[in-house]
Length: 307
Image 1: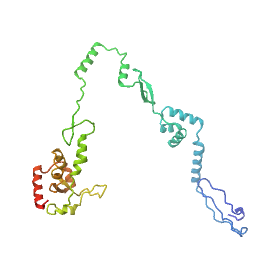
Image 2: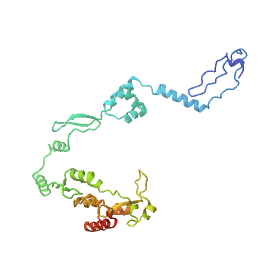
Image 3: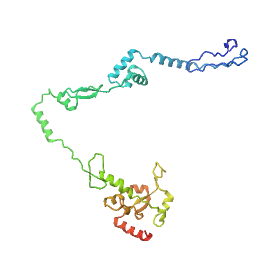
Image 4: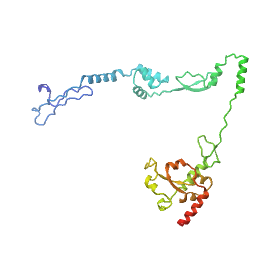
């Protein structure tokens, strides 16, 4: 670049095309304005294909994507007819995003349904705009279409015989019994527990049957090596030890609730057994001992440890 063609002090070369980097010359220095020299470094222009892409994008944004009055009117009519934005974009040969933005600016909302009257019973019903539905139900459609059919007596008799021989049988409703108390009926559709059990069992009885003792206080009664090997059970959202040891009720809490047994008996250390959580979960709510066996073990425990 020649010094004479550099221009006046403090000026730069014209700005490059959209996205390009312009060349900035050295700024003037105080007291040495006349002797200031300009840079000899010139940033080379981008390759030709980048310039072509930039020209194409500018053309697409400012010319091709320009919304005319005809396009806006067509957009409004298509929205009123119930077309979705994706389909409108295909019809107008534009992008889905541009259709959405234009609809937002014009405050246009697609109404997919409209009200119309049934052709048979003349009742008002809601249907999709794009569908060719003219009847409110299949019964109205059958009665309207079969109105002009002339059936012979033989066909009528055949139809009546088949209907009488195979009448529609309504299925009897199954009585749902509560899975906890096995007594009260459950009326709700997706429920298996009655309201009284939901309150008494889950809120009061079951929390009061939790073991509160420390197994390390009774090393003769429990196999503490299992805890040292596997550790205590912990769910995945805490310490994540799903293969750990858990405290199991020999006589289950559910059986204790059904038989009205005092929670202190169920939560006694004599009713506890250490086992893997996988074995405990497969055992479910089954009891491994009877209530009489539990009471005998409680008496032996109390005599041994003078509780």
